[in-house]
Length: 135
Ligand code: T46
Image (cartoon, rainbow, N blue to C red):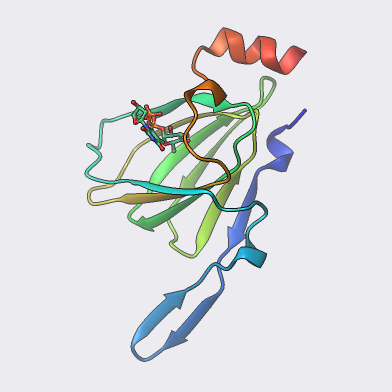
């Protein structure tokens, strides 16, 4: 079963010159096969997103612009990561509860995901998450 020690920050390779920075992720830089991309934007600063875990989904969260806090729980321990650098992605493995808040004005959260959308992969009730972790 996964724990918070499986959460990783992935450094995204960059090409930097006088025109700015080009950050690039290729399939070999990703620890999963990419199946879906989505992004959160226009998020009010007092909004709260997430509040669930996934049974088998891997995700890489990238703060393309601005910042937000990701609160992570594995059923035993908790951790808060402030995502604020567009060249650093947060890898969230399956079986981790997440809540996302404290979005800065204009922030954009890009998510790369290992599966297409499947509501059946979500655990949206914390008690059910704890039961899932204790199996
Ligand atoms: C996560 C955080 C970072 C779809 O129809 N397709 C999709 O690919 C997604 C992700 C969602 N939806 C629908 C399902 C809901 O009716 O969009 C609605 C909002 O989804 P949700 O409440 O799950 O959104 P967030 O921002 O709380 O969570 C999403 C992802 O679901 C989740 O995996 O980690 O972004």
